[in-house]
Amino acid sequence: MECMTLKPIFKHLFNLVLLCVFSTSALAEIVVKDGFVRAMPPVSPNTAAYFTLINHGDANELISVSTPVAREAQLHTLVTENDVVKMRQVNGFPVEAHGMLMLGERGDHIMLLGLHAPLVEGEMVAFELTFKSGEIVKISLPVSKVSVAADDHHHHHH
Ligand SMILES: [Cu+2]
Image (cartoon, rainbow, N blue to C red; front, side, top):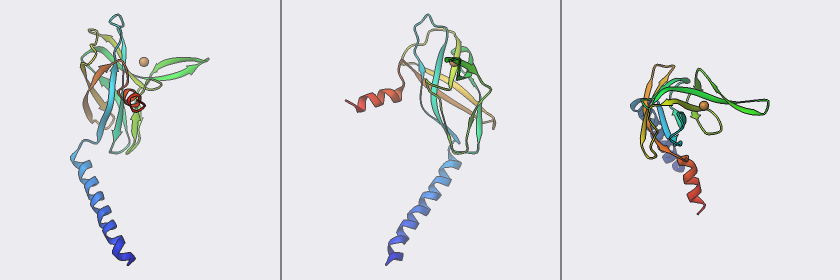
């Protein structure tokens, strides 16, 4: 009796495993989810970009970012020195195997320095992310005043 009920479950699990193996080999190992570029007043020459990255592969590291809209894109982290929060440039953001990298307004972010023109809210900005593995991931993020995720959260409470 027990065997009869368990068998379909094992079969189901087995199918799921097969599906996962297939999808990781067929799709990109690194996928970027919901991110945005902070819309700033036109006088500001700099802004920041945030996103969540999912790594379906081995341990990796985001080592550089480039975008056509700014002179330079730097990897920044926040450090607290004498109770003052400061931004500091780092050489890379490590990503664990099958892990996530979450950039956000209270931590690691992509700093865009020397915008060639003010960014317009709603426009898409292209980025090229280079990883230690040699993988290059091309993404585009919307220009927005608020985090898309934060906005969703807001709506849930209505
Ligand atoms: Cu910064």
